[in-house]
Amino acid sequence: MPVRWTSKALGELARLHAFLAGVNKSAAANIVRSLTTAARRLHEHPHLGERLEEFKPREVRRLIVGNYEMRYEIHERGVFILTLWHGNEDR
Image (cartoon, rainbow, N blue to C red; front, side):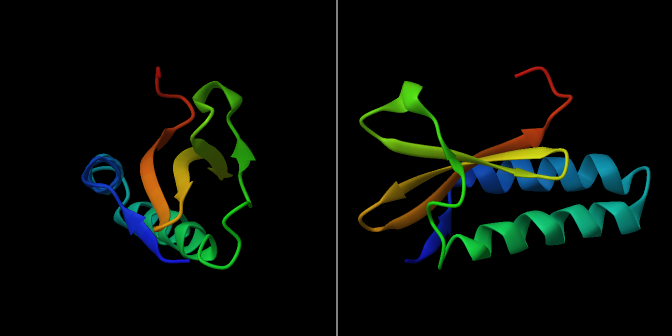
């Protein structure tokens, strides 16, 4: 099942990288690598994350990657990464 990133999710990934790179470039690269690796795993294991019932009938799930939450949707056309953020952010 193909994994696709929405423009919002890509923007969030860039925002997180820019924020961390100002403090620690190595940590910024590591977290981007961790998040993109987790997203690639959804190709073979799309049901890996916890289903969020409040979005029914859509199949929106969340995957925790370290201190980050990634939300994605399983659709017949593939897995769509919707958004992501650090757990300490006010969401």
